[in-house]
Image (cartoon, rainbow, N blue to C red; front, side, top):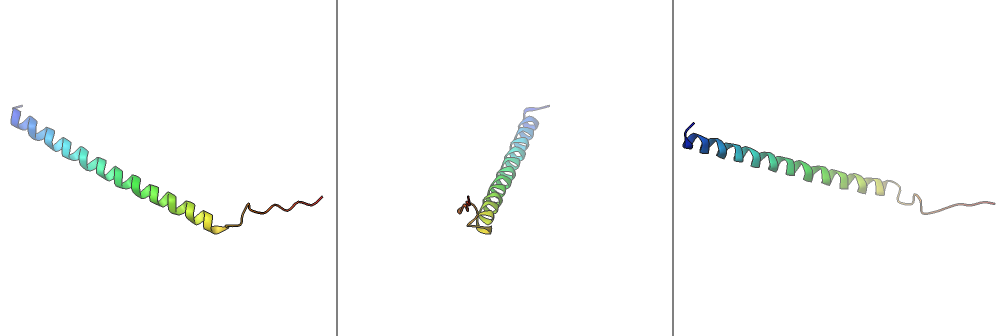
Length: 57
């Protein structure tokens, strides 16, 4: 394999890796946003839950 072909292959691999990392980053950001939305939704579902304690003796 000559130097030009090796350089081209390395460049393509670098581009593929960069694209994969970008897609994973976008996926991670989306998952974090969905998790935050889920937590917020659960907090809003029953905001008084756990605030009162009824005790009878």
